[in-house]
Image (tube, rainbow, N blue to C red):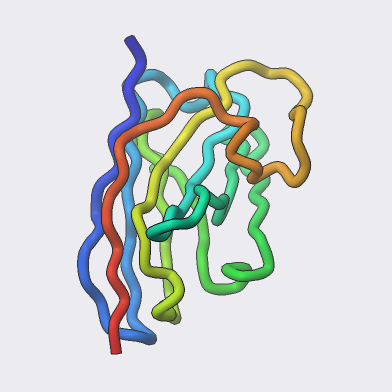
Length: 130
């Protein structure tokens, strides 16, 4: 069974930075898309970034563009990162990584719509406070 494990969450002050990691038990280059998502209390899960491991293309919603960056570990075929900078209190939430395994057209726009992803890991809590 394929697993995704997210880690690296914690507490940080407003304006600070944090790096989350996602380890995929399979080779991420055999996956169409990898994504990061945030869920705040009482809200639906929302995408904060998507990576195509093969093309290295990335997509971000306006709310995090310029502040969040997705990358993968060049020495590993299993790890993806979410680098978060200039953190705001509204970035607080549980962060999940997910995978769209099959190389098919996305069914929902934008690409970071959680419904495009079928494999999910457990979340890691990020708390941003002033």
